[in-house]
Image (cartoon, rainbow, N blue to C red; front, side):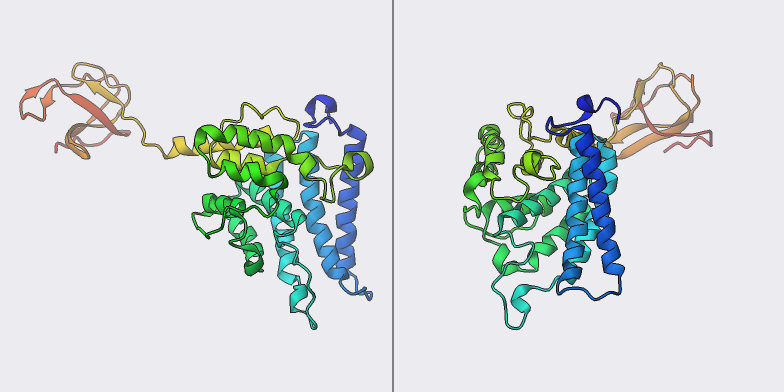
Length: 341
């Protein structure tokens, strides 16, 4: 990778470690697929473990690529396959509580568990930030597999789901994992002017609060794929929060936020009504096409075809008198009969 030190998005990742870890993830995923395809007897739960490894290591590889500085468009292209790999895992997961006898063990995506909570938020954030919002109902469906343990229990999660989907499940103002998520939850319910400081507080305490997760401290003693506070990015975009006070924090994925905001701005511009091109009587026609005089909103009179360079004539105005009028373009054309309304 060219000029890796200037391209990478976090200083903990060396080019050698990136290449080694990338190979490691790809090899591990390949082995898991081979194990699934093998007809050799497997230990109980081995297939489930392999399916989970394929999905989770694919996600970690995407985050590693982001840390290494890969273009956002490449990450966007990777995401659908990652979601599908998680979907395959979830579709074949056997809930511990459904076994005989039942096991009092949480399902993989029970958000009462911190690692599951983080994974759900990361996946929702990536779908929103990388223009794959069509996968958001799929992820929420995984959480709903154990609905009574997940839904209506966490105010932050339900506020985010409401903003993403428009559906609302009532929840108390309680956060399942108050450390470090309480400030972020507060940002979703407080006044707009208070939100930047609350998200900043969350971002600054995020890494320390992630100490119980399996990947905390991996830059010193494990496979490091990056430390990214995707939850803050998601809330920042959904609530349109000014991130200037925390955007340069090492763990804040500002490139993803900027990408999402730029795409949303482009989409809004595409959906906005296009301004009319208009010319007054006596001015020249800028391009050939159909033009008309607006009698009332949506109702044109004296519609006719003009060639480029034609001088616009007088017309009948809204007062019924002939005189100078404003001609408004109705569509470019290559020619055609003149039509008078």
